[in-house]
Length: 254
Ligand code: PGA
Image 1 (cartoon, rainbow, N blue to C red):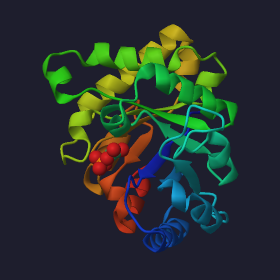
Image 2 (image 1 turned 120 degrees about the horizontal axis):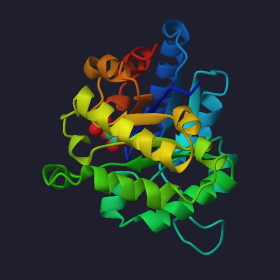
Image 3 (image 1 turned 30 degrees about the vertical axis):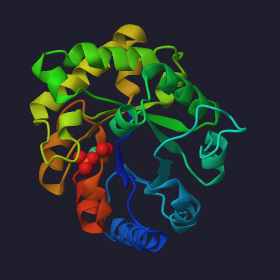
Image 4 (image 1 turned 90 degrees about the vertical axis):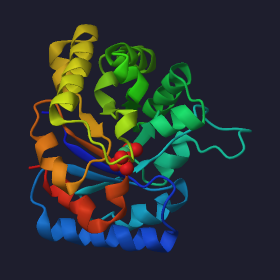
């Protein structure tokens, strides 16, 4: 059965002290209040990873991920962080190709495919992000855009490797805007992504792959989104910056 994963992407927010406080609250609340089977991931800035990894070590409901990684293994790449470094700081996951990286840092599919390879080689699970802009949706190009992002970023992987990948569908027009895709819109795309995986690999493999939705997920809309057949969790931005709202989203997943 595929995993259900709720990931809190803090982006460039929280000092170390604020972050440690937030994680302690989340950890205590989940221990007391959550009996479900979803895994909650904390995805803080790189510089907090090591400290947070120690803080969550005794809570099996919590895991750790990074927001980005280098496509290179090591060497003279000033300012970059390698997958082996992430692994050594306790990460199990790494976000690859978030729309903010694609847009502001010109990360394109071929480069992202290299990052996916680097992550898998270090035994980290990539959370590979895809999603269309508002213009692409209005021009009815969203299926085409998603197919390109998924095939160019992931379809060089073999049948074993693809099962280590989590896919996050994040329509760019819904990120940080307060506008969530309707459950029907999200489910339509998730089913489409799963059909791409089924055609490339097999229907059985497609059923094993976790597909998260991201874009203004909140406690108020999480339960409805998670009830959809192909939505296996969420990549949460703004609502992950407060313990109560993040925990309520986790609790919306049975
Ligand atoms: P948001 O961000 O929840 O603030 O819309 C989601 C994301 O960028 O992953």
